[in-house]
Image 1 (tube, rainbow, N blue to C red):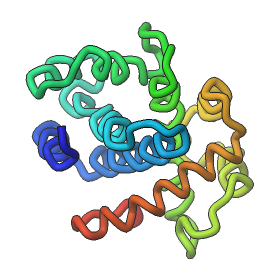
Image 2 (tube, helix red, strand yellow):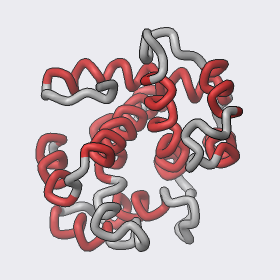
Image 3 (spheres, rainbow, N blue to C red):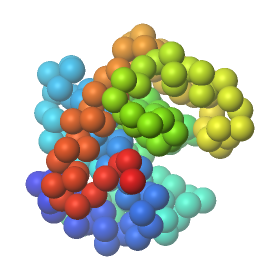
Length: 187
């Protein structure tokens, strides 16, 4: 499936700006990691874009309704199982690089955006030190599980600073594309 088609599919099920922006941020992070690992950027990007497709309709049962939304669109079992594996309490094993990555970037991409929005230079110059400082501030983005942020990066096998750098660079690169489409992660 092409990205444009996936975006249309996502918008059929996601109506809030918050979830749409989160999906776009995770898409950016997944594309950055695909590039880093020499994987298919479009495929990994689609995983990020569609990972929360059922969140608004079924927040208490997310991501378990994703298959009923993705199968009719032609997504295969591997794609769907990857989506199912991203939730923190998932019983689906994270036994592939893309599953580990989707889990690792899910909350981290949005946390990084939240940090960037507090800075005058936004994403420009944002580094792991600044992100770690905000992670220590329990009042900032208090719903985010800090241990999960670090443990998921470790499970992926990347240093935390490298993890932040990869995501920040992906967000910066993707922001240019999004602005051409009339979106922004930073407004």
